[in-house]
Image (cartoon, rainbow, N blue to C red; front, top):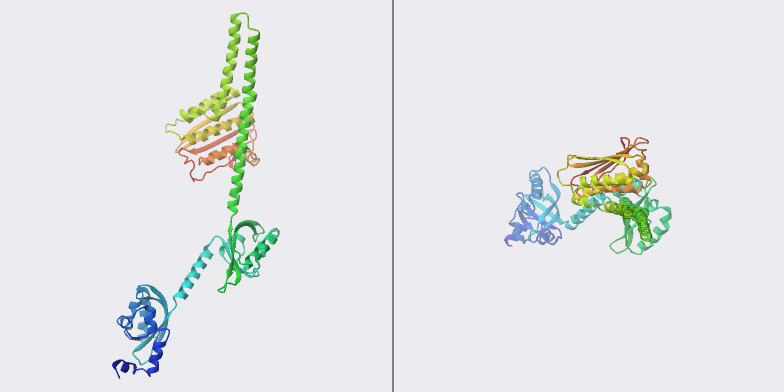
Length: 487
């Protein structure tokens, strides 16, 4: 009998050794110092080491330090007689440096024996599946979207926090219920047709629809549905992901409304220009034409009378030229571009007062630094719109305009002592003038407040930063106020 057979002979009988070698679970016999003495082929294959390499290592060398530390602490308790076995799930190094998960079971071979038996079961696939389920569960629970699973009868079997947030039902209220309670009555026929497609294995790509909340409200959602299959490919349920698109829908409606407003504003401006050209410029040119035609048919006898009539024609032509210049300046002010906002506003107030036969008191602070064209144009257009509105509706003949500088902002104030109006009611009616003013200020990152009371006049306050960050994502603010109360 050779030396190795003599060692095996210390065991109960040769059959134990044969079973030890044939066992599909990794097994090692270790001494109380944690040194492997016998290692079966299954464990060698599992870790990729030869039996000789395994016996040359200490048990703590097979695992990362944090795992080995927990194992060794329990092993020492075993050796101290504080326990006779223990189980632990930990990672093991393979020969190529990769890691696998194993379930380690340790026990004394006999109370009086100096040997310990260690059994290792490879549970890597199980741990990977658990981690995948954990990650999936974490994603599902943290998702802002509603993620719902249902069986073939449309009974809800899972309901995440996103579903509760969107639809209002708790998990306890939803589980076991049919998803039909979420579907508006007018959409149930359509949903039945979708269900028929799902049962044939089709996946429903995201589509927009409506769902009912616990409060009875309808919510816009983007919904995608997938059939869930078992290992054999048989469908046993459906998974739904619903995204709340209410804010997006509101934004789309607001954008559509804005587009309509822009078109209306453009058409109103074109109508105003056409009216000015027809009712003013065209009529004046017609009068000049008649005077010239009269001179041609009946030229005056005296030179003095000819000079007088030509002077009259010249004055009318000058008036027409000033009218055309006024319209041109309203469309685009060269002074604004080349002389700056103060000069442009002062010139506009002077021309506007002369044309409308009203008084405008314009005052301004010293503005030494350059003002961007975007900010200048915003304030200039606000001034134009505010004065046009005031002359048209206030029944006042005197107006005050103030352009002031404070810190890093410019503030424009346009006020009158007229009949006043209700700013909020005007906005609710869709007044294009106020709408265009508000949008200009919003895009410049500023604020607008309108104070007005019946028979107490109106004051428009506009405040914009000198550097507006035009076109940036800086949130803009706007408000309307009556008296001193913001609406």
